[in-house]
Length: 468
Image (tube, rainbow, N blue to C red; front, top):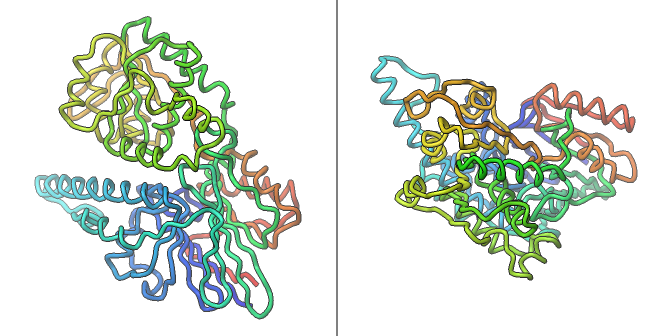
């Protein structure tokens, strides 16, 4: 039996998820994501390492761009087979790719003008990696599958998708290769969700696997207890209401925005906060929320009960979905405390910058961060306590209260990942630790090896491994 696995991304780094599995004459690409670390973006421009016409299918774990964001390039350059994912994943990916392409076009035009003005050439071409038209061209290849639905390729390869509990529609992918009478089971974890997350069911546990490819985004650390999240949010809301300011929340459009609405709804039902106006000011977040509403079959028991009782978290009193620029501008005229949820989550662009301009110098207001802030972003600069920040070309003094709640992470932490692996009833032949920075991946690999005595490897970018 000959099975080969090549690590084409997310190897000793957090983004760019992409794996090529070859078995039984079949070639499957698991994920096709963007590298979002600045120093690795050149990989997204590099030629693909395989003939695109040789790939039988792309298997998509979920919609985040570090797992799906390179699909428009793949299709533009000749890929013509199906792209499989759950229905929610394919719908959300379609939304996110078009938004990504729009931002790339705008960014390329801005860079081109700046470089012309400065008389220099940047490190990458002054053209978008792909266009809106390229993103739209991906849509016909999306092929939705249900959790547990078997897909057969060639004579001896079967694929199935299983709930990952990370974001709506996210999946772990199980591949069983049968060649020469021998079977090998390979599990790709995708991004592993935390247990007891709002809205979603818990991740799938597997009892058997020969090989496991597991993420390690938070493989070297532990999250704060999730039960504090609602309490912390209530404190922020109540303190800001008392101060008569606004709560401005930079938020990612997928999952983080919807979880925030869930907790707001929970606090309102419990009477822990007063009724205030809440604005979801993000066209993409609103479109993704629409996908949530189209797929109630993916909700957990608690979410289903809220829907049954007509206490839906996306329809609580005072919540408004803002779609147009005119509606967004009108928020500035609201009297009294309002919560304004807008993108981007790290304040790198989008409508959040305009709301920061209005509120960051107001002592009464709170800027609330509910997601990871990467080094060098405006969000990170604000969180680290800078007294003066530049927004939209102007300097503003930071007088607003800066708050951060850490309980919203969609990834399992070190102990959560270890418990997920602990579902295996006997030792796998090997565990590959990916999708974490080099230190995080190595620390988690060491932790698993010490705790289980299993063979654990941290693969390098481009490394090929024979699974036999």
